Length: 384
Image (cartoon, rainbow, N blue to C red; front, side, top):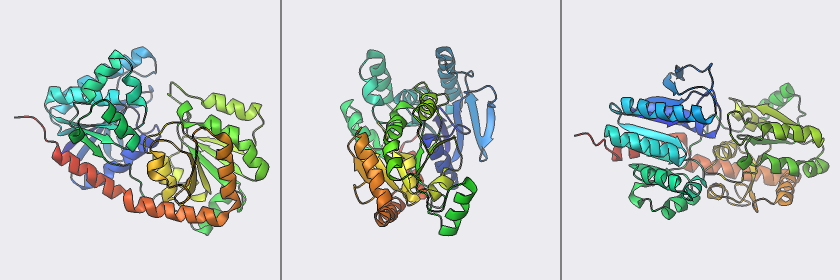
């Protein structure tokens, strides 16, 4: 079975969606899928034809982030999918509804099948507010299968009249072997190499440095946390590169201007599992999410997580059992929840163990890949 994976960003650009696709490819290949990836060529030094983990990756369009580059990327993507779609069994898009609409259009033209995965809540609702957006959604709704990551996204699909028989509820996957708790010797050795004390509390934030991920709210909460635990460290993973709503530079300046202590920007990393392995708490202050990969990875690593009560987060976290939930946007409650976990090591460890058990039984990589493989078999190409 030949599958064309379509995603706006891919390795060496790191993020939740990119890592999710990268993880899923290996078990799908083991199940008999022949996979190639098509993505956007964001920078001039990115090869048009490349291999990542032995999988062919083709990058289309012109380098850059302006409107003209985006237009050329869209046209190039359509032409490429029409050419390659004629010999593929499935066109599988990952990301926004607009990308799903492109996949749907090309599948109609090439008489193949398509799957559209929506990664974040709120985008469908935003598109539905204008005529161009509604036209995109009409094409998107014709997808042979729509992957719904969370209950919130499912409600948005229901609101635009997507056919229930086209919607499949498949969660994100996590590699529980990679994202695992480290033993005490491993934690101590890693911490020493990074310059942390063996008992220093470490809180980690991981995600794109954009407005919806809420780093600004975490930094607003951080001074209260360090006032209570002066040796606490905040490790910030991710960047805002190539993001139209980046807040990275603004946040870096805020740390300097406000004299925020013990907050370190690590940038994009390929080894988030190592950071999760030595950390004590995940801070997830997002304003909007689908079914956050970073939360699954932290839970698999036995981290206790503090999150705002939003969208797909509530699909994963049972308050007080697999993490802590606080009212969305309540910075004081967010800081108090982190302090609560820092004060109570036993509670923190119990929540971490329960979190790992939850994802190990419901979001294993092989299990989720198997669900996708089943959907691939259900949607047959329309060629006669």
